[in-house]
Length: 159
Image (tube, rainbow, N blue to C red; front, side, top):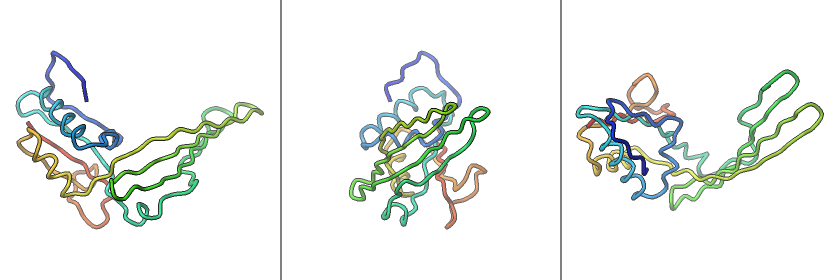
């Protein structure tokens, strides 16, 4: 949000839903304007957010394992997620729990985070309030149109 560089770029990418960590409209617009300032004329900004799953938003998740695997021979790591939605403010309050072993020792760490989720037209209005001259929202990383099965919003903004 506060990034400053003397350089300008043809492409800036904000992957892995990082834009969703900007909770307020002011933070979001400030970030869009800052990216815009750092692009060359005709430059592009690409970011992704998930397309909201209304059932999951309403019900939340309770201790759902979403990753498990080995990180070295005989040692495993597991990530468990719980969510508590704030439907009025369009925020998902997340709790991540990481469990892993190192030999016979077992460890657990927990951290909390919040994500702001977006609906399609809200994203379009937000981008239209920024300095970008054009934008396109795709439904997947292949650039396909949005559809009922889209799980992602891939946003391409152009200066």
